[in-house]
Length: 443
Image 1 (cartoon, one colour):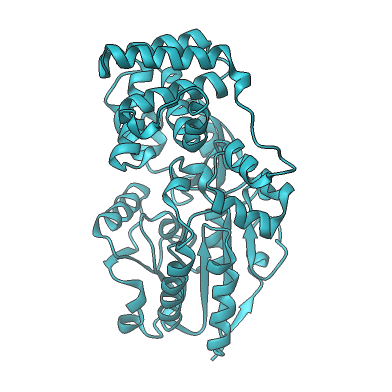
Image 2 (cartoon, one colour):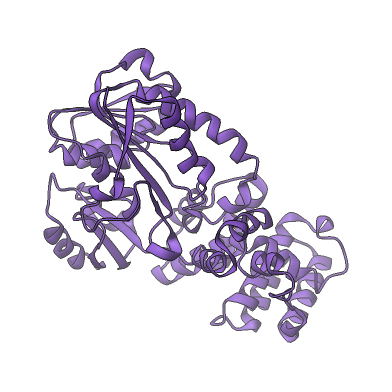
C-alpha cells in the first residue's frame, strides 16, 4: 500500500467514522513498513487535507456542477486529497497528484467515477486561476476563513476581540505544525545529558527558553524507535503546559491534587518537581485515561502518584481542606492547541461557551474547598477564550473571599511574564495557547 492510499484510509476514517486524526494516523502508519520520507508525506496529506476540508470543498465547487452530497464519501476524499496537492503542495507535480488519484479511484470506485475524478483534477490543474478568494478588504471574515481553514464563527470571535492583523497571524500559525517539545525526566537525567543522548539517537534538538527541563526538537526519527523514550528519560509535553507545574510550585513531602490529571503530563511533572517525595493524587472521570497516567508514571520511575476515578465537581466530598496545593487543568474548548489537532477545529461549536464555563466553575469550586489555609490553587486551560479563563477567575473571586489572586507570571522559571493572570498565544509566544492563574487561600 503506497503513501497516498494510507493517507486516504486515515482521512476516510476521520471524515466518515469520526476517528481522531492523530490516533488514526499513528495506528495506520504502524500497520505498514514505510520510510521516514513516506511517513512525513502521509502525515502532511492527512493533516493538510483534514485542516483544509471546507476550503477544499469550496475549491472543488469551482470545477464540478453536481452537489458534493451526491459524490460517494471515499471519492470525495480522493478529490480533496488531490486538490490539496494541486493547490497547497507545490513540490508535488500536478500530473502525479492526478495520476495517483485516478489509480485510487480505480480501486475504490467504478469506470464512471474514474472519468469524473480524472476530469475534475486535470481541469483544476490546468486552471488554478479559476479559484479566487473573497476580497480581503470587503469580506475579511470569508477571506480568513477560506484562506486559513477555520470555521467562520471562530474567525468572527477573534476578529471582534483581536482585530484583523492579530486574527490573521493566529489563523496562520494554527496551520503551522508545531515543533515537538519534550520534558526532561529530571529524576533520571539532566537536560544536558538528555540532549547528548538524543543527538546520538538522531534527534536534532535545543534547550527550551521557557523551562529548565524543556527541549525543542527540530527533526527526529519515529518516536517509537527512541530508546530514551522507552527508558523514561523524557515525557512529550508542550512548553506552555510545562509552565503550569512551575506556577503550582510543589514542594517535596506535600499532598497535591491534580483534579483533571489524565493522561498524566502535569501529574508526572509535579511529582518530578517534588523529587518523587510526597503524594500526588491524579483524578479523572475516565478509567482508561488514568491507566495512561499510571503507565507514564511507571515508565518515568515515579512512585508517588495515586490515581482515582472521580468526578472533579465532587472532589471536596472526600478531600475537604486536605491538600497543600490543587491544580485544576480544566476541560476546555482547546482553541489554544488547534495547530496540534488537525480535525479539532471542525469538531467544535460556539455553543461550547455556554456549557463549558458551567462545568469549569463547578470543578474550580469543589477543588478550592480541598485547599488548606495557606495552600495554593492553580487554574489553567489550553484555550484562549475569556469565558473559560479570566471570566472564570473573576467570578470565583467574587464568590470566594477566602482566596486572593497571585501573580502567576512571577513563578515562571525563565523570565517573568506580565499580568497576574497569564494568557499565552501561539502567534505571540510561539507556544500553545495557554491560560494560567494562581490563587492563595488566606483564610
